[in-house]
Length: 237
Image (cartoon, rainbow, N blue to C red; front, side, top):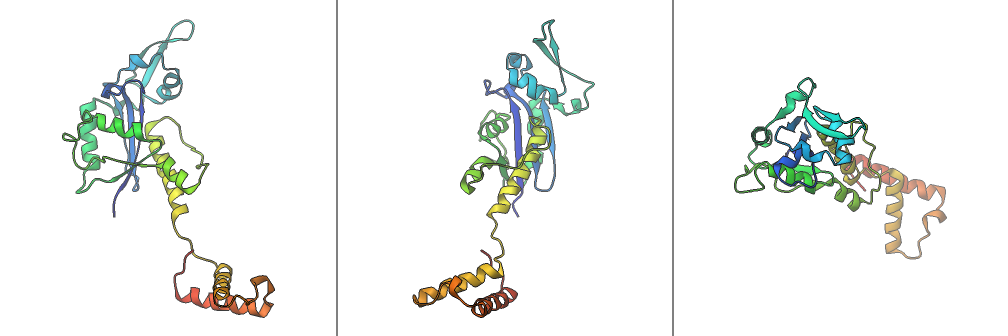
C-alpha cells in the first residue's frame, strides 16, 4: 500500500531560495513525524513581514528583539528554546528528508494550498530534479482541490497551533482523512434500496404505481426483499 505523507512549510514568500525556507514539517499516515527549522534561513529579511513576525516566529525557536516602540529590529535563534534541537542546516535537512521519504517508489504527498510547500521542499536540492533523490515526491495532492471537487466549503477546524509547520502538517492529514471519508462509497439502507428496486420496476411498467401510492404491504415486501439482498451482498450507494 502506498505511503501517504503530509507536508507544510513556513517561508518568506518573497524569497524562493533555500534561505527563504523557515521551517518544515512532515508526517505520514502512520504518524511518523519530522520537523526542522532552517539554520540557513535569512531571518533578518522577514523583519518587515508583519504576518511572519506575529504569527510564525512565535512558534519557532527564535527571539525577536524590539525597539522602544515595539518594532522588530533583530531576530536571533534561541538556544534555550525547547525546539532549538530542531534547528539544522539546509543540507542536513535534505539528508534527513532523503531518509524520511526513502522507499522503492516515491510516497504520495499531500499539502494544503501546497504549491509553495512543494517548491520549498524541492529547494533543498536547488529545485534540480536530476540531483533530488527519486523517492522525494515530485508532485502533490492539494487538499483544497479535493474539497472543491467534492463541493466542500468548510473543512474541520484546526484545533492545534496554526502556522507551526508540524502542527499544520498533522492538520493536513486530518483534513485529508475527512475528505477521503466523503469519497468512500457508503452502505445503502434498506429503505433506500427498497425504493430503488421499486423505481427500477417503473422502467419496466410505466403504469405501475409510484412508491407513495403503494399499500403498506407492497412497500413492506420491497423492504423485505431489500433486507434479504443486503444480508447476502455488500451493496453500496
